Structures are given as C-alpha cells and as structure tokens.
Length: 367
Image (tube, rainbow, N blue to C red; front, side, top):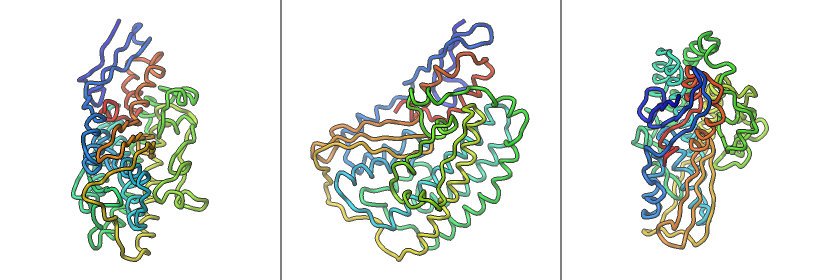
C-alpha cells in the first residue's frame, strides 16, 4: 500500500510530503518529497544588495534567524578583509547562543506534543518568552531580528540590557528542571523513542547530516570548536565553558537528549559572554560603510554551526553591489533526506516519532 503523509498533515510539522510504501503496519520504503514551500531564496539573493540579503537570509530557518544572518555578514566581511570591533564580536556570540536556546526550546516543547504529551510545550514557551523579551529589546524583532550588519551590529544594546539578559538566563537555568522532569525518565516517552529510528555514523557522513542529529549518532563535529568563528576559539579552548555534546545510540531518544544538554551548554556560553562584555570598555559595535557596498571579485564558502546543523553560504562576487551567485547549504535539507534510510523497517506509529526527532524547519529544506 502506498500512503501519502502530507503535504498538509498534523504529523509533518510543516508542508513536507512523505511518500511511504507499507507492508501491513511496517514501512518498506519512504521518500521525502520537498519543494511545496519553495520561495526561490537563492535567485532573490542575486538581485539584492548585501544589506537587503540579510533581511531575506534570516527567513529560511525562522527558528535560527540570527545565525542565518551571521553566515552572510561573516562571508562578506571576510571577502572585504574587514575587522569587526571586539564588542560586536562578543555581542554576536551572545545573541547567537541565545538564539540557539530559543531554537532548541521550540523542539523540546513540540516533539513531546507530537508523541501525545501536551504539557511540555507550555513550559518550553514560558522559557522562550523570557529570552524572546531580551532579544526583542535589543533588536526590535521577535523572530526576524535583522540585527547583523556587514561590519558589526545595527546599534549598541540598550543601557542595562546585559543585566536583564543575566536575569533571564538565570531564570531559564533555574526553571529548566521543570521541563526536564517531564521528559527525562518519562516511561511513555522512553517507550516511544528508545531504539527507534536508529541512524548510524556511516549514513550520517554519507548524507552530510550535521548538528545535534549527527552528534547523537556519535559524529563528533561542531564548527564552534573545529573551525571557530566569532569568539568561539576562546570559549571552546581548554578550561572554557564550551563543550560538544554527543551520544552514541543514534536513536530518537539520543537526539532529544543532545538537544536538552545543548541548552545547558548554550546558557553557560551566554553567561561567559556576559562576563566578558561587562569587562569590555564602551566602544563601537560596527564599521562605517560606503553608501554603495561592493564586494571584491572572488568567491568564498562560509559555514556556521547553526542550531540545526551546518549552514553554509557560497558567495561568488564579480565586484558589484549584488552577488553573482549566493548558494545556500541549509542544515535541514540533508537532515530530511536521510529519512529514506531511517524509516524503512519502522512501524507507521513510529514514523511520527522518527520524523519529529529530525528537528527540521521546512523553509530551511525548501529555501
């Protein structure tokens, strides 16, 4: 029997279509059919200047907007040979980690919801609101921050903001056990996720899967440590608060555990950024730019460790104010393709558990 799950279906959290072939209750083969949300981002990049691209780039993965912006501006700055003020570097790192926590909390709330547990999403959103408030105060945006600029940030943060971030981070850290107590050791959740949807390291490498999903299968890769940008070289140095969270089981439960532990690591990193920012003298957070910003001729690939995995921009410039080509390598695209390998052999009832544990955003798949 051939069964279409989606493209509009409660189990697919977004407009993703899964074409599955069943033998009774068991899945024989599965094919993710993507493109229902395609917005042609890459072609839109080519007709916009570098300031306008930042607006578009933060939308493909709407849960990781700040990190999406970062990839674009870091690539342009590198091609310009531009030095960013130290204060901007640490502020960017802080905001990127707060954005990572926001992303993970969304999945920590919505994944149990797909397994039938309603309560966790309320706890997750309580913590999200705490952090959303300080992100919104700094940038003016709740989801699409548009706070990065080539050369730094749009403006400095408001007076007293660092103190309010510290209060918010402490509040989230203090209340996180409320959410964890609903998930960790929950026998229904364990029954639905342990040993289900196992993804082995060889398949991870074969499909280019990255982020928390790859690390849950034992692939120890994190660009913040392995190819550092912003202030991560210092944060992930020996004795620093940065550490890479991994598991070896590669099942749905391991993927959830990685996400949960990464929230703690990101809060530690945010705390370290706050300490450094308090010790820095007041200073600029951006560079003065010409009225028309042109990038020298050449090409560059810039990858960042986004909350859901590796996010890369391949920028090709012909010396004009718009890129000749800006190719986007999104994390969710590869992470969803691997469902072809993971779903066969699973029961239909487990399909929702496996699908939800891949932690993807459909806009990030379709671009």
